Image 1: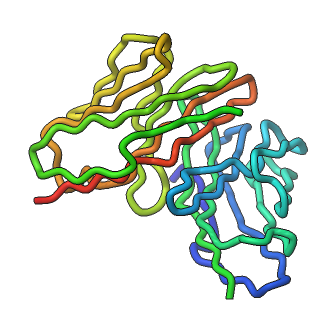
Image 2: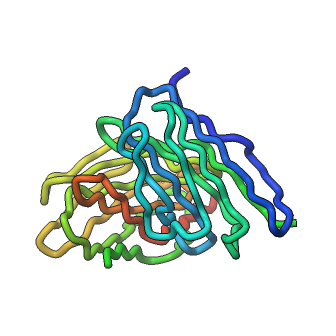
Length: 110
Length: 111
């Protein structure tokens, strides 16, 4: 089945820890995106990548980092510098018509 | 700064009602306006609107864009409980295909 797979679905982090959220797609899409969704805030763009080995900051990149070593994969690391990391994280890739989303990872702070 | 505003923020209706969801935008390098439906997890794509005045329709859902007044509406007729969701509107801008989202409209359809 073609699609976007995010893992894990739920993630818990202790204060001061870095965590990495996985996003894999088998749609052969060049462009991939990471969004953060908070209640009542809609989706906000963290980072995006138009092509392998290249990525740009979105609107709220502070405290996050990404890599794009393979076309299929666009992992997001939430670093300890992100002061309020509890949120729902959505990964997307861009097809011909629109961006399509994975099922998300819900990150919580212990 | 690019901005997308949706209204109302939440709406409760009864099955069979017709609803209109609003989306206005102020962005640079506008390309298209997109609507998504989000139930529990991934937003699912509904419509992409690029040209003014051309209605897009899918079953009971329809949408139209006004590029002069910078807004779009999403209509749902004969609503069903399965239409209960958050409806997201987003403006696609620039060569880098950046999406700027509104905060979403929470629609609840009561039996």
